Image (tube, rainbow over all chains, first blue to last red; front, side, top):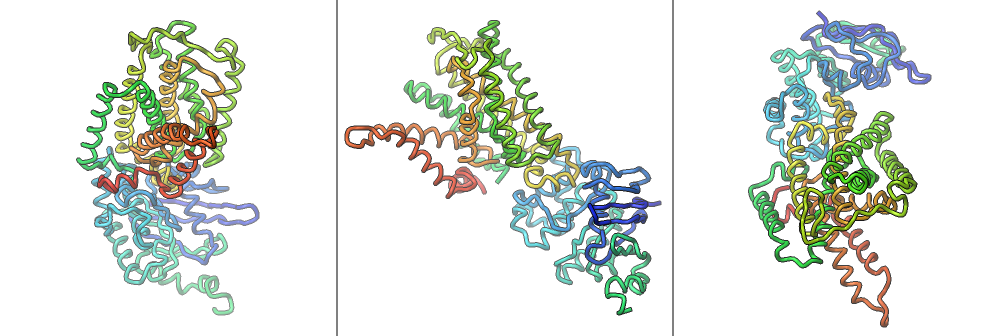
Length: 240
Length: 333
C-alpha cells in the first residue's frame, strides 16, 4: 500500500522543463530518498506535492485520494508536512511557540498543542531551549526546529528538504537516528531530498535519482550508486 | 516578547490592576482640562489596540483605519440626528458596515496577493475615496459637516451618550480595558497563534496547515469593527463630523502612531504609546507658549519638538518603548 503516488508529473517554468513526466510511489512506513544533481527538479517536486504551485500534468495521490490542486494549508491538513530547504522558522517567536503552532494543526486546543510541542521538542533535543527566540538559534538547531514544527502537525508523510545540509557528521548521525526512531516508533513515512550521501545510505530503503527533471533510475541505495547513468550524471560521461 | 502579558508575571498583573484602579478614581481629582486630555489618551489607547490587531498580531499594515473610524462615527451620528436612534443601536450598524468594508478591502488585497506597503496603499485609497464620497452626501451635511444637537451637560444619559466629559471618560476607560482583556485572550488562543505565524512567515504558516487568507480576513474584520466603535464615541463626544477630518489620512496616522511608539505587537504598547504621545503633545503646547522670539511666539515650534522626539524614540527604541520599559520594570523579557 502506497502512502504517496506520483504519476507522470510535469512542470514547466517558462522555457525550462523543470519536471518531466516523473512517476514514483512511497510505500507506507518507508523512508525514500530523492537525489540528483543541483537543478534536477527535486525541490520543484516537493513544491508540487506541497501545493506551492500547480502542476502542468500528472497526478499526486495521498492514500489514493488526489491532492494535486490543493493549496499548501489543505495539503498539510490532508497529512503531509514539509520542511523548507532554506529554513523558515517563525523567527520572532520562541522555540516553544513555533512547535505549538505546528501542533495546533491536530490538537483540539492550545493546552493540548503545548503538550505535543513539549513532547516533540524533547524528542529532538530542543526542550531546554524552548524559551529562546527562534532567531537566536544556531543553524543546526533551526533545522531541528523546522523538523519539530513539521512533526508537531502529526503528519502521515514527512517531506524533508535537505535537512542534513550544513550539519557536521556527528550531527548528521544524530538526525539519522532521530528519523529512524520516528519512522519506527510513530510509523511516519518519510520522503527526503538529500545531498549528504552518508545520510541517504543510512536512512533510505529506496532511492529515486533525478537528472534534468527526469527520473533516471531507482532502487536500493547500494544498486543506485553503482548505476552507470547515475555515475554519469554526477561525475560526467567520460568518468564512467 | 509577543506574549508579554499573556505570560505576565504576578508583578505585572498587580501593576496593571493598580493602574486601572488609579484611572477609575482619577476623575475625582482631575481638572476639566486633564479629563479632556485623559479622554484623548484613552481613545487613542483604544484605537491603537484595535489597529495593533492587524499589524502587530496578523502582520498586515493598514494606513486607512480612518475609514472604519469614520463609518462608525457617521452611521451612529446619522441614526441619532435623522431617526433619533440611540448611538448603541447605530453602533451595531457602524460595526457591521466597518466589518464589511474591512472584508472587502481584505478580500481584494489578500486574494490578489497585494502585500506589505501595497496593501497599505490600498487601505489609504479606500479611506480617501470614502472621504471624497462623504464630501458629496448632502443628506449627511457633505463637506459642511454633520452636527449633533448639544444637550445640557448636567445630566448624563448613557443611552443617548449625552452628558459630561466624565461620562465619556468612563466609557473610554471601560472600552480600553475591555479591549486589553480581549487582546490578551486572543493572543493566548489558537487564533492568536495563527496570526503570529502569518505575521512571521506566511508561507511557513500555510505549510503547517494555516488557512492564511481566512485568518487575515478575521484580523481585518475584527480590527475594523473595533475601530468603528471608537468612531461612534468620538462623534458623540465632539458633536460634529467633517469628512475632511473624520476620514483623513492624518487620523489614520494619528491612530497608528501610538502602537508604533509604544511597541507594535505588544499588548501594552498601544496604551503606553497613547500616554506618551498625548502627554508629549500637551506638554509641548505648554512649552511652546513660553518660547518666544522677541515678544512673538514661534509658530509651529510645538510640531518641531514633537516630531523630533518621535524621531528620537523611533531611532533609539526601534521596537517601541514598551519592550524596553517592561525589561526595566522587571516584567519579563
